[in-house]
Image 1: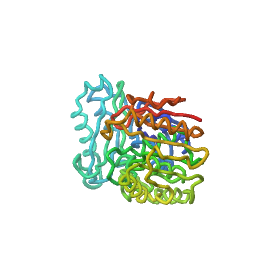
Image 2: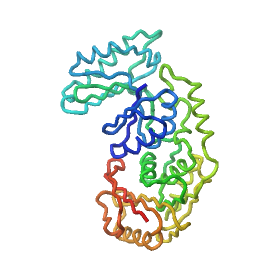
Image 3: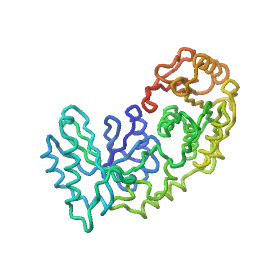
Image 4: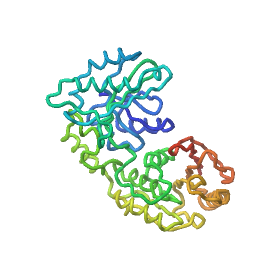
Length: 374
């Protein structure tokens, strides 16, 4: 079976390491994703375990595509009842990834796929093309260099939506980005972790999941994944995989996790999110200004998403960066430090020697992860 896991281009190598840990050896990296081969059980585990993937797709077919006629010929070879269930709503999303692909008529591509599905020999009424339906099955076409990969999205909601998020903070960090930052920082749960200026607490919560070996998508509800609505879905195997992953969760942390913020209302938001994520008891929350931060142990990992003007509308960014750099040099010199900052941030004011700068994106905003090793 072939599958595709997508992610930001900057974190493809992190995703590759996760797939390797799942035992996936055959991987083909491309821009913003990885195509890989695995059996159904491993694929089910990937849906629940991958911390940095944005989406997962099952590959249905790969073929050369130069015009509408070649697409129609390829579609005739697909027996859709092997993939889709009767009467289930679906939509079609083509991605025309280069100039030659963009010469194709996108609407005509969608129409060709819809007609192919609806002409297939389903036992009952065929699936209904309805992009406005609640969580329709999405048929995806990626067209580039005269070839097409046709797949079906099996995630449903994007995989950063773990199922525990609450509202209340103006600058939410995606869970997949938080997990990527932790993994790039080398965090494994064996050292204390501090997240100052924690906001909604996403980094601390993802750290707890990682340290406890807790599957990040384990609390998504029944029928939440699109794969559960596809033909051939193996419900007993899916349940067995879920039960195995729940049993593998550790009962205690090897080292503590701390999350703090200057605003008590943000700590309440973070605590509520941690409670919904079922890790609140593993995180030490406190209302503490960064300037008052004291290392809870001789060594550990400090990970922070620094506030910045575009994000919170503040006007004292220069002062903040000077204070952050001063506290880290004076009190956390023996710690590993990872700071997420905008690409245009005044990082020289930190006066810290970064051993590595990793370019990432926080939504549409270019950012850097500054690594400061002890």
